[in-house]
Amino acid sequence: MEDVIVIGGGVVGCLTLRALASWKLRVRLIEKQYDLASGATMANSAIVHAGYDPEPGTRKARFNAEGNRLYPALARELDFLFLPTPSLVTAFGEEQEETLEKLLARGRENGVEGLSILRGEELFRAEPRLSEKVTAALRAPTAGITEPWSVAITAAENAADNGALLNLGEEVTGLSRLPDGILVTTDKGEYKARAVVNAAGVWADRIHDMLLPHAFSIRPRLGQYYLLDRKVGDLVKNTLFACPTREGKGVLLSPSVHGKLLIGPDAREVSDRELTPTDAEGLRFVRESAARFLREPLPMNLTIRTYAGIRPTPDTGDFIVGKTDVPGFYQAAGIESPGLASAPAIARELSETVARDLGAAKREDFNPFRRKQIRLNRMSEEEKRELISRDSRYAVIVCKCEKVSEAEIVDAIHRNAGARSVKGVKKRVGAGFGRCQAGFCQPVVVSILARELGIPKDQVLYDGPGSEILKGKVK
Ligand SMILES: Cc1cc2nc3c(=O)[nH]c(=O)nc-3n(C[C@H](O)[C@H](O)[C@H](O)COP(=O)(O)OP(=O)(O)OC[C@H]3O[C@@H](n4cnc5c(N)ncnc54)[C@H](O)[C@@H]3O)c2cc1C
Image (cartoon, rainbow, N blue to C red; front, side, top):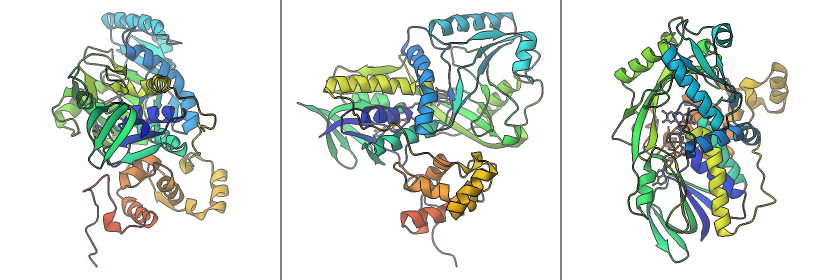
């Protein structure tokens, strides 16, 4: 019998697992995909929103503002990339300036610090390339940018380092009540747990309905992006937003933690909950919306890829977090934006509720720090020389675009929650995220995976089962 089973290995599930692992509880995470962070957590805008946007009094408002405050310390403990990067909500004319005033008041009510409205010289000093048509902007200095999938993966690794169990590539297919807990049925077996946390993202309504009468629906909404080369990564210093509408926060223009430029997303309701296609119409909308921000044309010729993600939008309008009517069944459902920013706060509250209900005590031996990850591309020449003198595999650069070495890839494979696929390596060390999009490094990554996992090369997967890259020997 487990104490707690968390369903879903996105940012919410992984952070909740880690928070639960800090209590005297036996915890397990079950994720249906081959790797963690394969849902909304993989493809989004990566903004740790400050918290001025959600309506005061909502769960979104509370968790966003609290989650934002938790990020700097969390990034230090888990060693993922997080860069404080102010956001600017831009207004084009008087009517939109009124919206800025409303957002300012809302932000203050939500407890967001340091908000101000910039105009004139001050505004253009903050963002020199901004279009002259922008008349004012709400500046939120506490916003940040991060690498969303790494928040999830590093949290799961740290949880596993502290004894949590991870079942990947296993789908929860049924839940039923037991006298002393819940029976979790998967496509691979059965588990009994005193408590279950539903963090199943876009499928959270289906998981809910396995135990309770239908109460909410998730409406999948697609959002498409462009990613531009780091040659233009410094085009903007802040994350630029348009004034929000009923549809959401609209298209943004933002630096990425890797020094690239992110443009997107659009918003379109879709019927498939997992397919993430891009289309010409949506991308044109993204291009045209973003073009308004700057006084110069956007360098779209430097696009290195387009991609899309699916928002798990609940029809309730707010996050659904906490206990349910079934004893032992908890949820973090409908976690659309600002879910990434909110996740640390959701995880903290949810884990405290579960631990209290189960009568668990805090662990004294919980280690919140993940073993530091060496990132060659962030080191000085002297540091690199010192490292290479200790391990020559740091001198073997596998991904030339992102400057990722063989030693970093090997380390990523052998950690808890380590990489088991080419995409898994990409998520953990960035090999393949650069300008050539793995054109050069993929064969080498395949060889390293085969060697380190002890499998033939034709069994190495790109992402999950059925995504083998090689068919067999030609010569
Ligand atoms: C286009 C877009 C832009 C966004 N921008 C931002 C932003 O800038 N800032 C921000 O704060 N938020 C943003 N968000 C929201 C943020 O990405 C999400 O709130 C967050 O990633 C949700 O995490 P999650 O763990 O709840 O869901 P997910 O990451 O989707 O994880 C759920 C997991 O559950 C698994 N699962 C489902 N069913 C089962 C089952 N039966 N058995 C086992 N596992 C199962 C899935 O495979 C999945 O891995 C954006 C979202 C999108 C799509």
